[in-house]
Image (cartoon, rainbow, N blue to C red):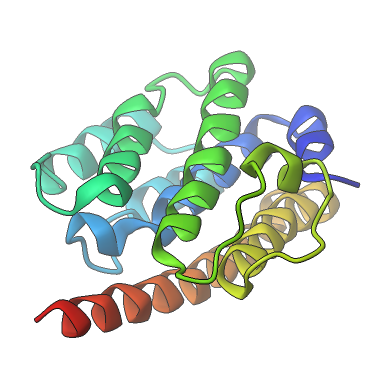
Length: 180
């Protein structure tokens, strides 16, 4: 099943986790640490206060202009997160986060191809660069594990996200060393 189809079929929790996982993997671009979005993950696990956790995260990841286009896309993901966990708002956000995260990975990968991100989300994956392909796999994995296991899949979704965050942090670090 394509990523677009998985997002279309996801429930509220799956949509929130999908968008949050995309944002979580991009936190290194915003200067955030690994724990900054934990309260939002916890809110998904126990129906805690998503809106309050979101405001705290926004405050800690105060917007700035540094970081270029990739950081700007990550900031937009955070700013666009709905305070209300309704399926309609979350579906729009999860879809936008998916596109933005793939675009971020594409911007950071010197081997990235010229194919539109939307075609990748629909399943056309031939010739994808490794960084973008891995991000696409992570997005699919998060949605599949939550569709299969509900709230019980949140731990695995977080593990997938943490792995992706480490990869992106390494890419950002490598790029900074190359420029400095």
